[in-house]
Amino acid sequence: MVLHSGTGSQTVVQAEDTYDLLVVGGGINGAGIAADAAGRGLRVLLCEKGDLGGATSSASTKLIHGGLRYLEYFEIRLVREALAEREVLLGMAPHIVWPMRFRLPHRPGLRPRWMIRIGLWLYDWLGSRNTLPASVTVGPETSGPLRDSLRHAFEYSDCWVDDARLVVLNALLAREHGATIQTRTACTALSAQADGWLATLINQESGAAETVRARAVINATGPWVEQVAEALQPSAPSRPVRLVKGSHIVVPRLYKGSHAYLFQHTDRRVIFVIPYENDFSLIGTTEEECHGDPGQAQASEEEIDYLLEAVSTYFREPVTRAQIRHRFAGVRPLMEEENESATSLSRDYHLQFDRQPAPLLTVYGGKITTYRRLAESALAQLKTVLPAMSQAWTAGAVLPGGDFEEQSRLLADFRARWPWLPEDVVRRWVRSYGTRALKLVGQADSLSDMGRHFGAGLYEQEARYLMEQEWAVTADDILWRRTKIGLHMSEAQRSEFHAWLQEGAPE
Image 1: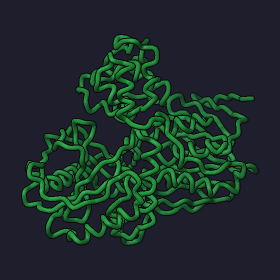
Image 2 (image 1 turned 45 degrees about the vertical axis):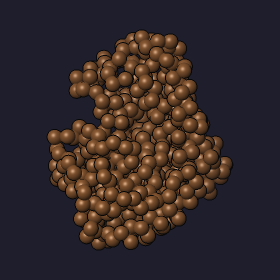
Image 3 (image 1 turned 90 degrees about the vertical axis):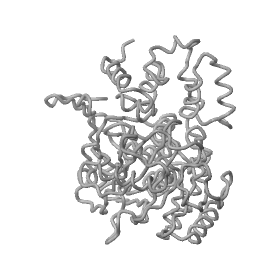
Image 4 (image 1 turned 180 degrees about the vertical axis):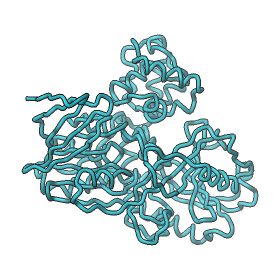
């Protein structure tokens, strides 16, 4: 039975549905927890006030890595766990996670070569590599982009990931196992009950509200974790969090080759330059204290100057502000540590489990690479209050679309199936959707069946798929998160696509 009552312009829906677990927050941690929990047989509801992965989880440096520089801060356990997860995620998501070689040139006056060599040896040893090649010492680049003065360099392996799609694929996996995913839905209140929680959820577009019951709640709201914790359960003390902004810029491709660069800067921070979306290079990141709304974080002019100066020290040709095609910033919630700089704060996660007045688990910190292990740890803590859950299972799981062996074979299969599709579209689909690209084509037999072309290989049928199957609502959801096509489109094309959505995506 569902009761409706009007409160001004807001509709309140009181539902008798009871969930085992309510997950608040649809970033990578929330989506990963929802997928794991649903696969263990729990009845799960995930609510996200905006878009899935709409904040920190889509504004990362897009790496699956152990974090080479974390060894300097003796975070051996975190690095070991992250390196083990690197291998797991390569198997789980071969369409959106792939190996990448990183070149680390040595710059005199900074970390000595012997220190780098030892660090890379330890990195290899901790990584228990199954598929990735070991680190090596390489000679000077005679025809590369680096300055002639950089005579020594090292290479090592890590992985690249489409971060926003990783979030969406975990939400899809959760839904496949029966979870309910509600985007544009905020949890605004919790009331402790004898058997768990009564939660108020408000749709951010319609204003409609509903109440649901949950035996346990997880606060996985990332940089909003303290704010949400205080609002939902003021009596429970929360751990102090420092918000640290990381900004990135995107410029036209700076060099040939599939390798990335890792540059040391004079402040002992490191800057990545990564091949991005075929035609571009991604440069990041910074570490700046964030004191405002995390949802409004933007790359400051000072941060951009910092990145440009850092990379121009290494490249023969300076990188200039005029080259910037896109910029973005995300806010990382790091555990506060007394007298520590933002650079040295731990990237590890912490889980706080409060049983009174009802089961509430709060997630602090974390990084994309270890989201799956974080989810396992969270559910292990909830085992006593949700004893019916089955065992951990995601280590051997495959994310939606990842059920294939080699990208090259899948690409050849799609070429044979759809010879009328442009080559760049087929390649992008393989690396974004994997086998789920079959759902995009549907019954189409020609390019004209794909509907309106908005530019840069985005057709109406793909946009509709993203809205119907992947919770996309706005132009940004599609152009910058579900895909990165916004980078390849002109301003006029992006405006045209936005207008099409505003018209209600007419048939």
